[in-house]
Image (cartoon, rainbow, N blue to C red; front, top):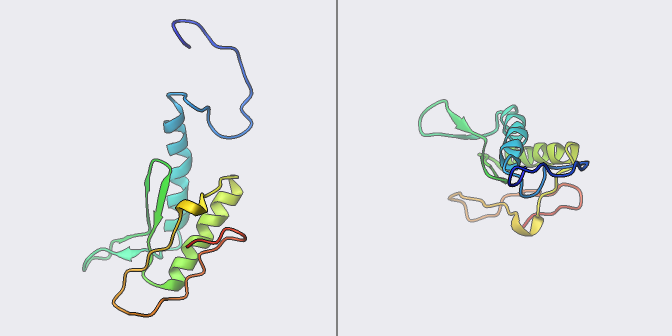
Length: 120
């Protein structure tokens, strides 16, 4: 509705309407399932000396996955890829990367791929 007038009907085959005020909310309801999928494998980063762990965070359409080991990181990436494939989403690999924070000088073996979607 704009200025009290209804727009013409149109089909939405995929995604949410661009520019619609409800689109961000609809996307958030949809994308929150990604966190549930990632958290289900319990491969997050422990918070301090607690039993609490964090597997991922979302902000708008950005996702950050967190893992303690390279194996868990690969598992998180595989779960993310499965989710995006299922729901026909795509990650912008030019804006995606794996960041390793550890005391070792060696690079861990992080696959960082999902088919043809190789991350930096």
